[in-house]
Length: 243
Ligand code: PGA
Image (cartoon, rainbow, N blue to C red; front, side, top):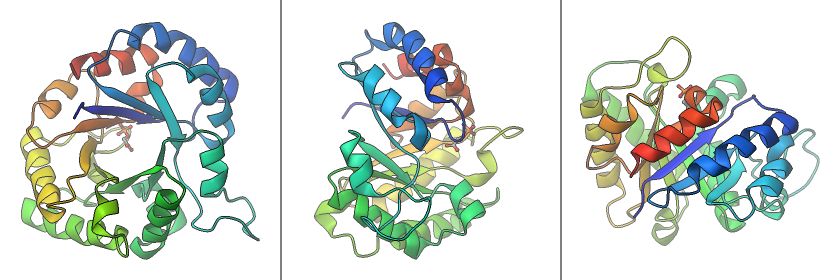
């Protein structure tokens, strides 16, 4: 399977800004056929991604979803709404949503189910909160993986992408986790889901320097890029490494 290289823009880029971003990105990534690529704009700019990415090698998606299809949930967005906008991927359980919105593993499992039911691919984010012994990180992440996939049958688990994102490695002032630690964690996640074989991608301060050693690890199936990918040239450069 090709490496999967994606980004979430988090709460960045208006639709006008995203349109300009894609104008710069498209010619740079057109020749890069050796990886699969996705981008997750804020809800308000998904329509622009659909308009500007059509016919390109990059698919688009969303950063969150409500678990119900419709109803009295002011401000929320449902899976059928995202499916109609042509979304391929929907991120669930990012640590910033767990932190800012109190999302639990049980709530996240319902979101995973909703995304699958509407024919899209969930990207389930997991990761230990603090830097420490690998054994306790494995224990923490195991709980999150089982919790986030609760009720999802084995045949559907293969369709889920797991994003291993140690919380301590995410955001301004952090540095990417050591490739050896990442490899151990990814191998452990692959073991947990033995048989299902989902793609396990790494996120947390990925940039043009850290991408190569991370992608060089046997169980790293791709990268989930945050702030580095706010520059389309850097995002393309990371995708180029995935060859
Ligand atoms: P970062 O974000 O690359 O800015 O650390 C990563 C993420 O949250 O996925």
